[in-house]
Image (cartoon, rainbow, N blue to C red; front, side, top):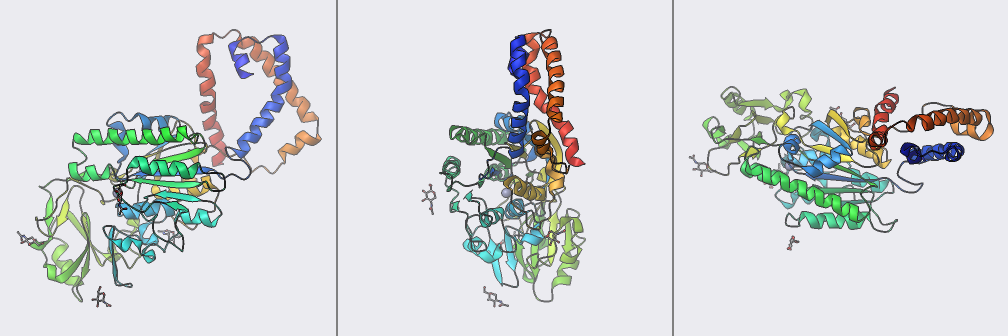
Length: 487
Ligand SMILES: *[C@@H]1O[C@H](CO)[C@@H](O)[C@H](O)[C@H]1NC(C)=O
Ligand SMILES: *[C@@H]1O[C@H](CO)[C@@H](O)[C@H](O)[C@H]1NC(C)=O
Ligand SMILES: *[C@@H]1O[C@H](CO)[C@@H](O)[C@H](O)[C@H]1NC(C)=O
Ligand SMILES: *[C@@H]1O[C@H](CO)[C@@H](O)[C@H](O)[C@H]1NC(C)=O
Ligand SMILES: [Zn+2]
């Protein structure tokens, strides 16, 4: 009908039909909108993708048509503040729990727990010990407890039994399994028959982190790597389309952290200041965690505190509040934080990287990319900033499950979503249509006037102007609707 009007070919008879049908159509649309994309028994679908170490500004550095396609048809958040320390394991667990590292307990890629007297390293099978993970409940466990289903392709922690559960479908971590294979598994899980299909999926890919470390983010060679990630994203989008999932699945593409350039001129050698005999080296640069030998804490602290302007030495109890990195036994008594671009080593022998992350989460270079699209998300919407812990309550909202206590806030990110139909007004609007004629008559009169005017007016408008009008009307209505949401 709208297209009939827009083409200007509106005969009086057609207008009459349109007049009769319009109230039905608009009621129907309202219903559709109220239930949005999911029917009575069907949960909304959500796929969370992390390209490790994909810095927020990589999408503006080389052509990345697939990232841009998602943001043009969805949302982008330009600046995402992730959690301290800006390392892979802590941040991936924050994304699926909404908790700071000190609360979810995965405080680093390399940890020591003095209570358990055990060490954790992302390089060893220690990651499979459940107790490291169980201070928190990841979203894939929560959704299964709520009766939904989840599938995980190599997200850190997703092949570990946590609170007695694995994801319904998951892959054992194996870096040699290609991105394409990971995607194919996820597509199978999402498109399984209704009862078996997953509602929530997580997908992890090791790049561009690995290249960022090896080449340094400022290397021109990174351009090729970034373009390659965009192609991988294109593959994912295409497979979703082929499986007829693309329009139904909410797709979030983000990362755990950014990356900054290092230099062999910017090395701090701890051996110059303090003997190795005084401590155990627990975690590495740029936030070195030291466990002092019995009674040596103050001696180490005094030897390090003022000796080098390119590092900041903290006793655990003095770590600044805004890092939220203090209240956990796995955070070591002494932390040495390198300033951006600097590397802390014991001495110069050993591997040196040209790029790293882990630095202050307030640094812009540590920020990850964030784009999303799908039935839950607004279209062509740019948001300036969010915190990565806000993603968890957002995902819970999309999946219609109650969030566990967390450090994020849905209010901070609600504007990324299509406004819900307002439920705050207590008047039972639908009943008015059922029990009273007056509003119906009113609507008809109003509609008749509007239609009459449109029929007259639209004929005057040239055909050339019309396609963009239809396309834009939906976008233009969004900011107005959005105002309601904030009231
Ligand atoms: C901690 O474990 C190590 C072996 O991994 C052992 O040598 C040491 O005695 C243990 N420490 C305590 C306090 O139990
Ligand atoms: C990891 O994946 C590769 C490629 O699929 C395979 O050849 C290899 O056997 C796998 N390793 C393990 C331990 O499963
Ligand atoms: C650096 O440390 C290693 C042990 O990690 C040691 O073998 C080497 O001799 C040291 N190099 C210098 C120059 O002190
Ligand atoms: C983060 O959330 C947890 C769970 O609600 C809470 O225990 C903790 O105190 C919060 N941390 C901060 C810094 O608010
Ligand atoms: Zn990472």
